[in-house]
Length: 330
Image (cartoon, rainbow, N blue to C red; front, side, top):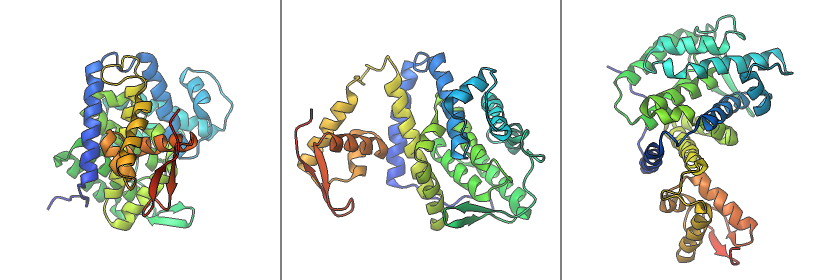
C-alpha cells in the first residue's frame, strides 16, 4: 500500500488556494514585465537572506548582496559558508527535479558542503529538535530515515493534490522526518519553492522565505501545531498564508499593476474593512480576509494601521469581543 501523509483539505485551504491562483493569473498576464531582472535579483537576495536568518545567520542583506557580487565581507567562516552554499543551490534551483530523491541529496550537498563532512547523506544518529521549552520534536530513528524519505517521494510522484497544497505537505513531512544532521529547514523551504516553480515559473523569483522570516515564531508554532495534531493541516494553512502574502506583495510591487490594482489599493481596502465592520462589528479577521480577497496577515496590517491612526479599536478579546469605529480615516 502506498503511503499518504495525513492531512485535511479545509475550507480555509481551498479559499487561500483560490486567492493565490487568481493573483498568479494576474502576474502571468503581466509577464514578462511582471518581474524585472532587477526585481528578480532583489528577490533572490531576500530569499537567501531570509532562509538563512531563520536559522540564525546574522550577515544580512547587504553582506549577502556583496558575497553574491563576488566581494569580500567580514563575518564568521561558517556564516559566509552558509551564504555560499545557499547561492549555489538557489542558482541551480531550476535544474532540480522535485520528484527525484537523488536531486534533493545533491541539493543538500551543495548547500552544506563547506560545513558538513557528510553533506548529501542522511543522518546516522537520532536527533531531537529543540525549542524555547527544550526538545519539541523527537525525529524518527535514523535507521528509518531512508525508507521514510522513499515513501515521501513515492507519494510526491503519484499525488494529484494541488501543487500549492502538495508543496506545503511535503515541507512539513520533510521537517518531521528531519533526514539530515543540519540544513533541514533550508532544504525543506528550498524544495517547496522548487515544487511551486515547477507549477508556475514565476515562483522562481518569489521571496517566500523572506515572508516566513517575518513570521518566524508563527512558522515554528505551525510546525508544532501540526505535530500535536498528527497531520500537516495547520502548517499547510500557515504556508499558504505566507505564499498568498508573497504574491500580494509581488503584485503591488509591480509598476504596471494599474490593471485592476490601483496604487491606492491599501487605502481602498481599509475603507472596505471599515464598511464591513460598520455592518457587523463581530466580523473575524478570517472573514475580512475572505471578503477583501487578501491574506489574514494583510488584514492584520491594515487593522494595525487603522488603530494607529485612531480610527478603530478592539473591545474585548479576538474570540469574544467586537470592533469599534472611533474616528474618521484621514
